[in-house]
Figure 1 (cartoon, helix red, strand yellow):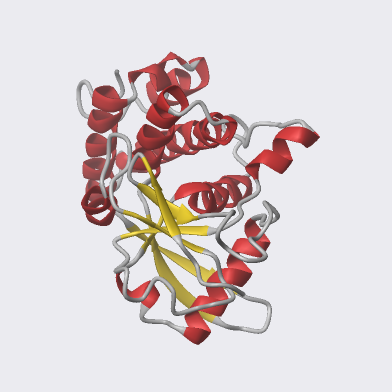
Figure 2 (cartoon, one colour):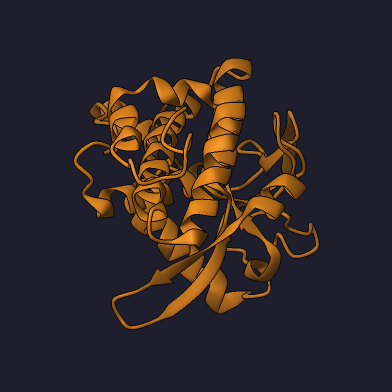
Length: 236
């Protein structure tokens, strides 16, 4: 493989397909992404110590998590075969990744974000959460993944500013996941003070950054069903 050269587009650094010999096609579904993350873990685990998974790979992770919930109201959108191809990733994008280690794994195409559209690398780092990955042979390890609402905000802005089709599809997945998380936290908040605090924070952030999510009748119904919440917490 040739030397990876990073180009910058609105702050996103990604390998140039014209300058990278045998540049990877858009073929990675979530299982493919997990395989690449395993390669990074086994070859250069220091990359995963501070780096935060973002971009399309992170969106595919949230799609898998949402599918696993089997929630009756909030499900992954159904895409056409052509859209499913657009959803595939060609690289693994990270925030908070030092340039000196970005090229340690020659077999994995890695992208490095310096600043995004509304959010920067520090924003993704500060809002990140752990994601545990498990494999059929028993291997288990954790990485950091960007907060789903932060990703939604980034994809929403990118869909307008950059006009890339994948951003629109990613945004649709993240919208469903954030609504599921909001409804799930609300259901747990009546009996769990920690979940109540988490729900209040997420609800407030959604009202500030993604008020359009509250236009979903299913979300409104699920929030209204939690009558045991403190006054105002079941309302938007």
